[in-house]
Amino acid sequence: MLLAGAGAVGLGGLAGEALAAAPAAPLLNPVVRQRADAQVFRHSDGYYYLTGSVPEYDRLIVRRSRTLAGLASAEEAVIWRRPAEGKLGGYIWAPELHWIDGAWHMYFAAGDKGQPFRIRTYVLRCDGRNALTGTWSLLGEVQTPWDSFNLDSTIFHHKGVRYFCWAQKEPGIETNSNLYLAPLATPLTLGRPPVRLTVPTLDWEVRGFKVAEAPAVLIRNGRVFIAYSASATDDRYCLGLLTADADADLMSEASWTKSPQPVFVSSEETGVWGPGHNSFTVDEQGRDVLVFHGRDYKAIKGNPLFDPNRHTRVQRLYYKADGTLDFGVPAGAGEIPDRFSPLDRSGAFLRVEGEAVGVGEGPLAATQLRQKAGPAGTVTLEPILRPGHMLRVEAGKVVVAPAASGDRAAVFKRVKGLAGRGVSFQASDGGYLGHRDGAVVVGPARDARARAAATFVVS
Image (cartoon, rainbow, N blue to C red; front, side, top):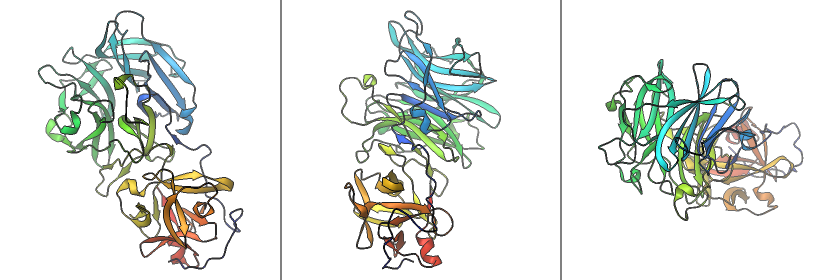
């Protein structure tokens, strides 16, 4: 419980309290501009690796860093360029880097010179352990049952089996691409005929084009999740989701359930359009992270494939109480948002509802706040659904208001959690941000109950 009437304490120093640790370099969106179809993962060597499509569609790139934030400025190596003529001389799309049997392999889609949309999947192999400096050579073309448009392959392991999942146009089915799955016998060959996982038939999967592509796999909470991208690559591009029980036969179509609605779509509130072609990784604390591309604007001149501004973005991935994925909305430009759960209200979070700030359960996007660094170790808290607005103290109550430079009522000192864990936020009048009777307020924290109400677990 919080009580009114705290004495003022300057933000410059707090006796007996230390600032909660903050990352040396903040992780900001977009992480890398003009890198679409992004794959980011953390390898056993401790590095984060990134690859993706470049706007020119003419080369394959890799960068790496010890941190996710470091990928933004990491040196980028060009490991391969398309030939000037002939096979593989067309568009180069959607690379993925995989460590297979002690060697780096790069899977990618390529067209031919003069037939740039004759897209097939190929593999490069590296002769050294350093993916950026090793010599890469063409291993060959992945063999699927049909000689037809195919792309966006990924690889995952489950219960001792190495699986290959990809998108392809199957003869006789009037779609642009469907999703398929098969065990991978060698880097180029399937171990058995594939299972067709899904065909795009729902309204949100067939806008502009009939597309199911770019599968990305996450195994968590006794389930195998496959996120995939659907529809045209403009603002209608979105993510769908397939789910199977982890103990089910993944090669049986009956094991998979398709979510009836898209799970990740464009957001006018946050200013991200066409989010898709995702991958999954973990942050330095081991928390699951969603990687995807998206644009900063909706209107595109000409063919969206040739608009260069699909940027690599990341944000933390969350789970519902039943263990299923909760993607929320694309979080927009700036610092990666957090959720703040009061220590005395497990499962509840700071939540924005219009101009009001309360404590409660989702929806996820209403509970995500961006910590924006201010002067002298302070922060402001920006709701992702209200860019340019901040949490502000007015007469002891916290509300959402437009941001204003130098507004001390919107500035907080982030300190170690008053209850011995987590974090707390001290306002300029010396009181602490906490909750009382469902509202978020600022006041003193004189006893254990008040300190718990003013301490937050960050996720």
